[in-house]
Figure: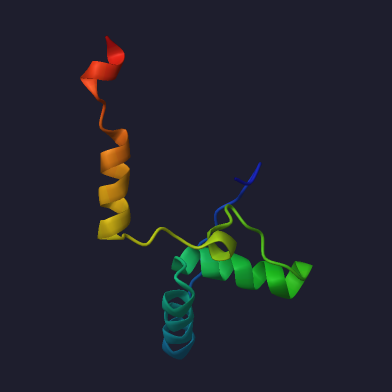
Length: 82
């Protein structure tokens, strides 16, 4: 998380620019805000400022077989706890 951040209100964004930003945010699986912060950082600082590493680490994909295996492993056998 960033130590100190500021908020901005930007007015007069052309419809075509807005559409491109929204499209890029969806493709990148980022919020519109995070995409804009990344783009500003990249253009002015040469790199995006990250609040997390989700773009590097990816996300959790559900798998029924794996979830079932975890459930079995978490089951406590009362005989072992006497």
